[in-house]
Image (cartoon, rainbow, N blue to C red; front, side, top):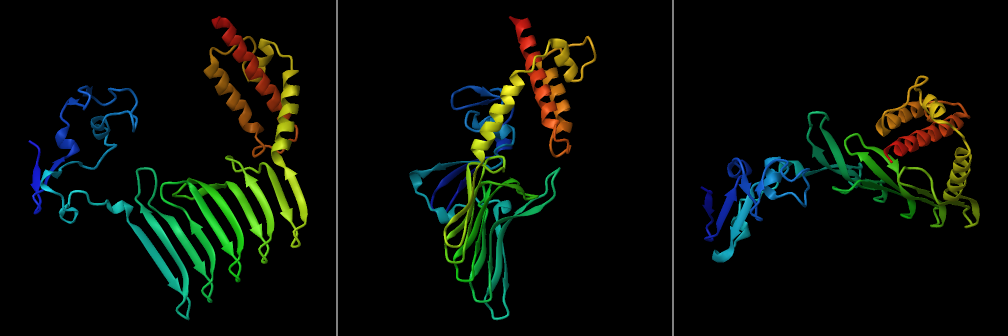
Length: 305
């Protein structure tokens, strides 16, 4: 049976623990039997509650409330918060008693593969006069961390945005608009970063008098380079054997499928990355490898027609 707890207000709360409710097959609200993997891959919106409980995606108890006898939330002990959502705040003070620094963070428990960590949520630094000089925000549930620096006169000095790739190690990349300001409030620089953490669009720098001193359109430059690369690449004439050789296959052997082509392609590309080689002509080699991949994939596709 289903355990029933009666509160002082007369409320009946039906608490069904996931483990107790799940024994073999379970009928869903659509009267369909749910099994692990029964509806293919799990999906938070499409999978049934029972499937998500079986897979331990949902680990909280499923609570059904009967409102016919009224409801007193102060007397309801059935929906307490988990300990791992608790926020902690660390505070430090100047000798004069004014706030110097505070940090609010979430304690991330260790997993099988990752150590425990403290994930910052908010951090502020103050000078001895009480002016906030650094303001950091990293809201729970979103990957963007914002940092703002301030002058002693409380004017904004700089603002930066990061996309945090790993909230435990805090490995991150630049994102969005980065701006610097002169102490009078005039903008000093504006740099844009794309989703890869690389400069994009119009980037500018200004003098204290507001005069523009430097500007560059990175997106236009990238587009022109792509057009030049593709034009040269398209003119490379390779037969099937030459393409196979460029991807490292021995003479007379051709790839069996697209998966093999892609695997060979990645292997040949790895040492050509600018982080791996100082060779200024490495991009020419990449052009040949890229063209070879295209030739071989088209060949494989023609065999299926």
